[in-house]
Amino acid sequence: MKNKTRAGFTLIELLVVIAIIGILSTLTMAAFNNSRKSGRDAVRAENIATITNALAMFLNDSPVGYPASTGECLNSGSGVGAELKTSVVLPNIPLDPLWPAITPVDADTDGVPDNDQTNFCYYYFSNDTKQYKISYFLELKSNAGNAGINTLVR
Image 1 (cartoon, helix red, strand yellow):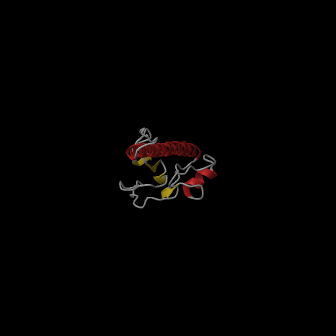
Image 2 (tube, rainbow, N blue to C red):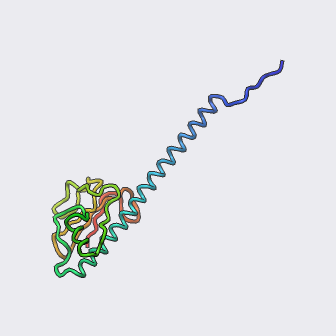
Image 3 (cartoon, rainbow, N blue to C red):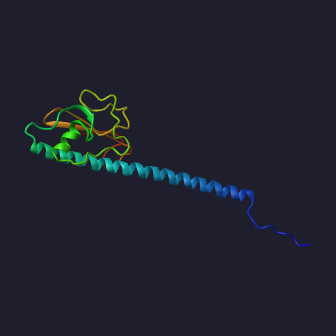
């Protein structure tokens, strides 16, 4: 009698291949998520630069200085965002890609959110017509700043 050999894979071989595919897909998803966070941080950095330029143009046209605010999320509907839109220095107010309307709950009296704050809008504060602060949250450490709270003071 001739030995019959069966074509196919053994159970061990199939399990090894499935395990390798699982490990590769996990690594790919982790890299993909970091890429998405990095992309959102790049958008945030560009938005802050746009808002900063708009505030500089607003200051050039304003006889009193920067718009006053006790602290608010920038948006086109009210407050400083509406002022920038009305003065035609910023036709569209940029919003945070994930958290456009989440106000930090523990912003200090100086307008800067506390260290334990996460996930909030572009938070504008100015109690002086010569200075303003914009706080924003980055998901990763990048060229735009460290992960966590960043505050721009001008």
